Image (cartoon, rainbow, N blue to C red; front, side, top):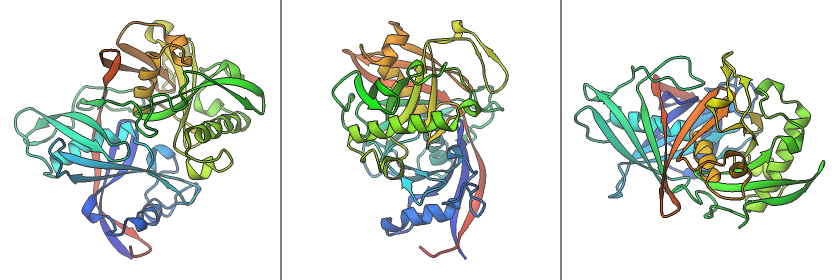
Length: 369
């Protein structure tokens, strides 16, 4: 048995194993096998590792102090597959981004003073800047607070995340195909999709086009619908140049993320709360590693916000608002984003999250890396 220092943290509606960069295997070619070993993958139950048998709890953050003048820390995100021998490093996770600031503060990676610290983060997956505003208490990241976020049962101290210049995070283009809307041939015939890359690439699918209302909760998606959504996502992955449609599920399972969109409508969320049309601008149902997300990925919210401002996308046709705010209805509730625009270009999208440290110690692996 071999042991490695590890911290478990919740960030937003996700949970991750967090490592210092220097504690990772020196040979990066061993990172994938190391993280699979850590999480207990491939195994749908992840019974022999830290993973929680859900894509939202099979995540990793690798963090180090940055030697680049414009950043405080550098952060690499990894999505560990449950059922395949695959770790995806292509995109970022916005929820897990919220753990980086508190971790950097508490681990002494940055100097802090006063009641709040601004942590400048380089996400190495997308090569983009994220600014995390962390409240402080006695020189440490504050945990307790009265901020609730949908999908998390307990309140916490607010962490404001600003995603700067999110356009073209993975593909290098805001519109990877050069079009606001594309027509594709599927097993149910031709449908229109929109592929937008901001913070993470998403493929938007109209709920109506695939026989859904759009307000379905995760358990209401049939296997046939999930297969159809993955078929569409795989076609989009090929259009983005990530992998052929036949190999996309294995070679690029995390990006682009499939997102079903529909007009605002009343529904009951996962907590049993009735959500009214007046609370929202649109309804979304996002997929995470081929399964319905129980809430909403933060990078997804950033991309949705960007797509809302691009005339001709499926999202823009639904939202039709001049406001910088977008209220996104998801299975766990409502998320609000605020966009800062500069000469028609999105400079930053800001969201609020909470995070906390759950455990610190050592994780044991079966192999030596």
